[in-house]
Structure formats: C-alpha cells, structure tokens
Image (cartoon, rainbow, N blue to C red; front, side, top):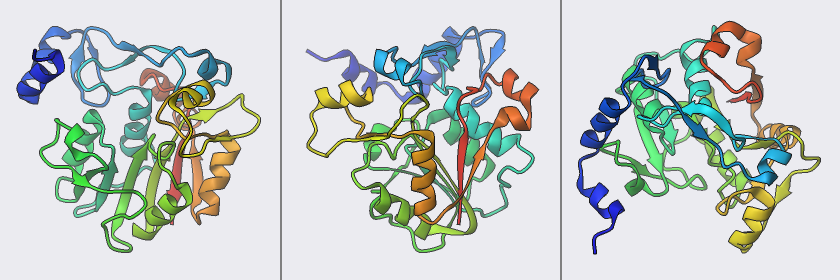
Length: 264
C-alpha cells in the first residue's frame, strides 16, 4: 500500500505550496515569505524538560509559525536582522552566501536578495523539495575554499553535529575577513551547566536529557557564547527589542532569543 508520505512526494512541491496559500488565505501576513494568511500555527513540543529549563528554541509558542513556509520566530529573527536592523547585512552584488539546512521562507527571501551568490547546503540534500539544488556538505569538512563566504547561516544545526570545535573551525576557515556567520542553537536559560551526551547515547537518553532524540548537547547562554569565542570569533549578541522594540513586537519575535553574530 502506498503511504500518505509517498503520495505527497509524487505531487510537485509548487502544487502543495499553492494549495497551502489558497487554504490559509487571510488578513495576516508572514514577515518572511510575505504570504497573506488567516492565522499562524503553534510551535514547540511542550515537553516538561524544555519548559522547565526554559529552552529558547524549544518552548511552546502559540500562533507562531506560517502555515505556508513554516517560518517561526527563529526564522523571523534572522530575516529581521538581515532586512530591518540598522547594522544588518548588506546584500552587495556578488556577495557569497552559504545557507545550511535551508528553511523554505528564508531561502526565498535571501536567494531573492542575492540570487547570484546564494548556495544552499545540507548533509542530506534529498530532504529539500522547495529547492531545485542543494549542495551536499558536512560541517566537519566544508567544500568551500578559504575566505570565500560573506554570510553563512546555520540555524539550529550545531546541536546535532558530532564535533562542534571542528565544525566551527571549518566555518571560520571559509568565512571572509569581515564576513558574518549566524549560528543559532537551542539555549537553556534555566540550566546551571551545559549538557553534552556521547555519540553512542540512546534516543531515550537524549529525549530525557535534551528534549529531542537527535540532539547531542544543550547549551546555557554563557557556555555557548564561550564556545563561539574559543573558536576564534568576535561574537555579538543582537537583541531586536533593544534595537527596535516596536517593530520587534509587530514581528512577533521571541523576547528571549538573541541572535549570535560571529565575525572573523
């Protein structure tokens, strides 16, 4: 018997996306893909561990995600800095942009702003139906030459990788002087010490201690900041509510999430 997932794979993604637009048409607008939608979807898992540790990126949030492009507050935060912040990234002609685990809405906006320089990457390119081409890449051995990337986006990926120092050294290697890497991970605001599990840890242990079976670690705010600094980055934590509080509120950004901007 053909499964529902298999049937879905037979339908062109453009047809699925247009169907979502029609079904969800309404008076609100997604700040990332700009689709007019009726309402937004809840996000987060509601796991007791994540709520108790106040894990930014894992907390339950209501009316948060676009039903068309699935962008939530964490994608909106990235696009807010890129498009609205006074000191945000400038999409100069020919700027080289590397986007890892490319989110649907961000892909469209960023590739539209820099079509000649945008490249999407992932360890499993076949997962992405919204893009014609995704380059295969492992963060532990990036295919780009030294000093070749102006903007690198790696949103909620580092909590999955086996060797974070190696991945960060590779990101720093390919980043141009003056370039910036946006490197977001779940942050536990109410955890005293970070948690790191071995590669051979069980899915059950990962769920019990980290809240997700494919995560290997959970950072505190300071431990993550120190990890990025130890990798040789100059790190800025951008708070959109300090920068533009009214606009950040209108965009429904998460007041607990800061953007980690890593400069070489």
